[in-house]
Image (cartoon, rainbow, N blue to C red; front, side, top):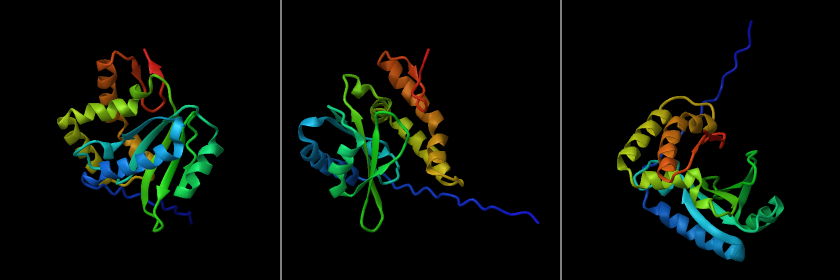
Length: 192
């Protein structure tokens, strides 16, 4: 008799756009500015909660651009009182911390990144800005998200990867508009 392995399927919970999301971002932005004082070069609200009309997991994604860019323990110590927990991603020159309430509700992702003069041309920011001026793409993205939330997926990464085609198309348009070469949104490699 064989062994049957059951994979637990992940359920993606999407919320309609909430006017509270920009406020939650602004509140956290002020806290981060006080916490990181002179190191802070930019704090940007990214991800779906940053685009009016987009459905999203109700988690506020924040990019914190700093200079100098310290080693990981510096950020872990500073963020510990705010109950941010480090998430290992394997990405270079980026630290990801997630915040949960005492009840275990995921509320924020904080990406700590080194500042440079090209920071505002990061794909995540270009994607956000392009969607903000393209309501037809917001509708299309919402439809894709609804579809993906209705099918069984094993992990959050599966959900993210399933959106890659759409995200790549929008980033391609945004980068072209800025005169930038095409960049793979998953590997970050510049493609000629």
